[in-house]
Amino acid sequence: MVSANDVQRLFLQGVFSRSILSFKHAQVLWEKCIDAVKTANPTLDIRFSDKREDWDSFVIKINDSLNCLDLEFRHLTDEQTGREMYAMVNRKDDEIAQMATDYTPVEIAYFKAVVEQIMLAPHEAYSVSSLLALREVNSLKTNMTKAQAEIVLGSFVAKGWLLKSRRGRYSLSTRTLLELLPYLKSSYPEECLECVICYEIITRGVACSTPNCKARLHYHCCRKYRSRNAKCPACSQDWPQDPKNMTAVGEEAIKDGQDEGRRVRRKSTEDGSDEEDEEEEMEVEPSQPSQTQTQSQRKRKGKSKGKQKKTPTTMDVDEDEDDEDEADEAPQQTQGNGRRRSTRTR
Image (tube, rainbow, N blue to C red; front, side, top):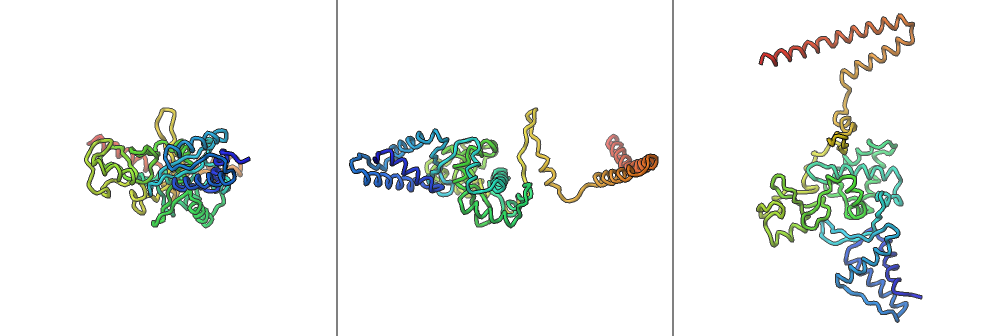
């Protein structure tokens, strides 16, 4: 027998068939579900209401029924349009597993690598160029080619996980911010900034130009706030009349060519300080080995060849190489002593 609870069942079926939907779309879906149930059982006394409090009560009931499944029907404001968006979110520890149904482990690892570059982008740009996104394939220990990575990136955009701008830069979509927000906050706590008006995560908007002021606002929050106040809500400094003169947050905060280098998360040490990952040092100067490395490699090759011969011969080879190394290091030591003398003279 059809009951009022079937409204929630129909609604959840409609939500699961969509990745993300707007507030108005969700309300239309709710209304259609009520009409379908009433058609099946006209004796039911259920009515649709467009009041916000009735919608919130319906969402609470939905989430109560989803608690046992570690799921949540969550909402977030779209940073570009300011529209309220809804999506089904997995509340388990590994939120990135939500992509497992559509992508292979290698593709998910590539997605996480691209997300890392987006979150660590300089100047709070929260975006990455197409070139740098494709270069992330080199950081993965897989056989994925750049041609394959380009196809996978297109799939990320098509399925709403990433956004691609006219400049060819990739950034996080509303779906990613909704479904993977716990993952982002746990993995990048320092990079996850909040809007001082709505207190939601911000990757696009404006920042107060006052030094050391931490005020960040979405574009739509800034427009609403400036309509009644012209001072910063954090430092109370006067803002410029034109919002375009404020510091940008997001893609507009960076120029082409400013993020060519690869960035790696800092690792916290036991004493509380931060150390860069060794991978970043290798990425900074990947061109050619130093002279010291070349000499040491030659020395190892010489020793390995000497070990294949008799023992006296090996000793002679090592002594000759040691003499050559001392001869090569002598000028360097002389230069170092010369620097010390000049310092004392000064």
